Image 1: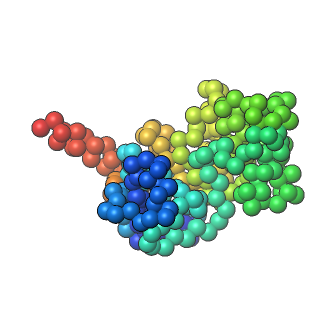
Image 2: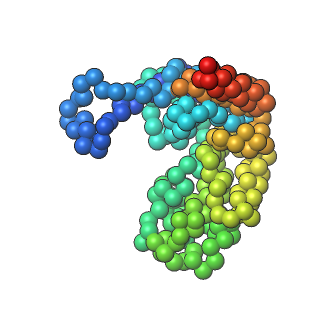
Length: 249
C-alpha cells in the first residue's frame, strides 16, 4: 500500500439512544440509568493509502456515516486512534455552514473560512466555483432566496473545487437535473484521476464499481471484508442473499 493518508486503529464508537429530545436534554445534567445503546463502530482497524478511491458499502446502520464523520472531524471515537493526514472536503451536509442572509458569493468565502482556507486562495477559485454551480445572477442574491436544489449546487461546487487531499462522498450525486448530476459525477472522476484520495459511500453497486478500485464492507459496526471492489461487492451480495434465504425458512 502507498503511504497511509487515513488510519484507524481499534476504533469504537457507541451512541446512547434517547426516547425523545426531553430525555436527551436531561442527560446533559444527569447520567441516564441503563440506557439503550448502539455500537456504531466496533474495534475497526483500516488504512487508506494516498490517492486511493475506496467505496464503503453496507446496509443502513452499518456504521458508514459514523466512519465518514470521524474522518471529517465531526464525530470522535470512544476508544482507538484515528490519523488523517491532509485537508478534507466532504460531500455530506452540503449546505452546512451557509448563512441565509449572505449572498451565494459571500457564502463561498464563509464556507472557505470554515474549511480553514485563506481569503487569497478562495479568490483564486471563486470563479471556478461560480461557473460550476451554474446559478447565474442568483450568485449575488441572498441564499434565503435559493431553492433547496440551488443551495445544494453551491455546496457541491465549493467542496469539489477547493483542491482537497481527501474527498468524502456520501450519496451526494443526486444534485439537480440529469445533466448536472452527470457533471457532478464526471467532476468526481476527474478528482480521482488527479490523485486525490476519495471515500465513496453509496447503495448503488454499479456506481461504486465505476468510482472505486477498492471497497470495504461494514456490518453492524465491524469490517466484514476489505478488498477489490468486485470481491467486496460479491461478499456483500452473497451475505445479503444468505440472510434473506434464512428469513424465509
